[in-house]
Length: 66
Image (cartoon, rainbow, N blue to C red):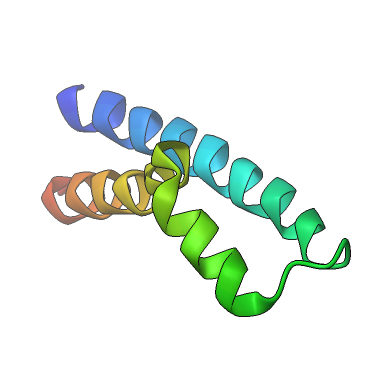
């Protein structure tokens, strides 16, 4: 049961972080260069939710046996 909760928490974090990252991608057509976009992504804390969520999902799937 613990690993399912870890999986679902990771899934929620990955969705939230991915959505924010995709939303920030809308700044590229508005005149932001790709280099500036990556600097922006690195400076925003909410964009780190996506890799954290993927990590939690991976850990949960690794330890789930059934």
